[in-house]
Image 1: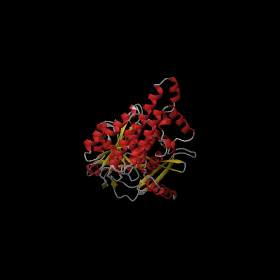
Image 2: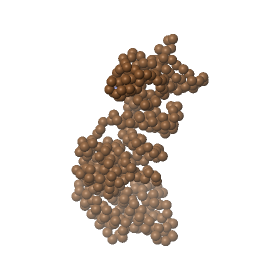
Image 3: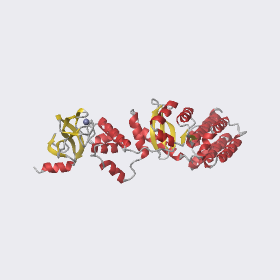
Image 4: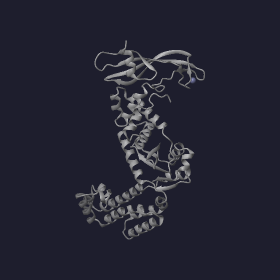
Length: 422
Ligand SMILES: [Zn+2]
């Protein structure tokens, strides 16, 4: 029958022809089983070493899920040989269209893996008619294959940060490449060991030697780990975190001024926390009036707010002397204000002056630190309940590296190299 040749052409698996087609049921969306056989056989490849041989021990029919034919789900059936390899002994035969042990074809894996990056795994599973666990395995294999073939870069600037993963899993340490804006590694806890482990396992000696600066917050264990593993690198304290400390100090002032000052003031200061933590330039309209009313009621809070806003200018200076002069002026403005919380912040800034001013020598991209944080939070929020850490890391890498930026990139993931046997 001519249709067998047509079927082979539609299936389009290089080196395989369609032997027969079976329908599992009647109806418009029945599953179809396609029996395939090798063609143009030049020996069978050993799955271990790739050597070709004719010495076959036995064969057993195995199945793989493949891309659907219109509405029909497809199962490929192929009698996979077991060969006697000279080097490896008895091994299964290597098939061109799927990885060893995988129960779906490589092209279906690519489609599912890509879909999982823009929709929940459960949706992708329904779309492609596989179980959730099969979809998750496909996604993991897809991301692993992508990660393996990426070039190993030598980042000049690293970022070390903690992420909060909820009450049970607590904190995680994230190591990232700030030049390319990509996540490199993920480790549980936020201890010295976790960061030191990341620095030694995720980076080879060549990569470690290239690091000039590490951007982190004032967390002591991180500073210790950097000093220990990368003695030549400079620590640059992250702007984002310094301003976060300033925000916390401002909040302390608010608490002190309103909540410990009797019921009338307390009622007045209630629900203003987020308003106060916002930057002046992002506050608009009636909210601005609200803020002004708050300041009119309490001058000290106003002073603290102005000081916090003013701290922003610190990062506009280009030299250490400039930064020092600015900080000196800032501390002077603080004097006689009776704001112990802000004074404490001032002490911290002075103590960490070297780290803060280090940005003059190393132009670390603070914006990247912040955008990485946002992306990471987004991925964690979408994948809530994600217990497997290795897939979380792979997803973070994918989300931050953004390998698909054009339709050409997408085509590369869908069509290129799917039949190759690497
Ligand atoms: Zn072999």
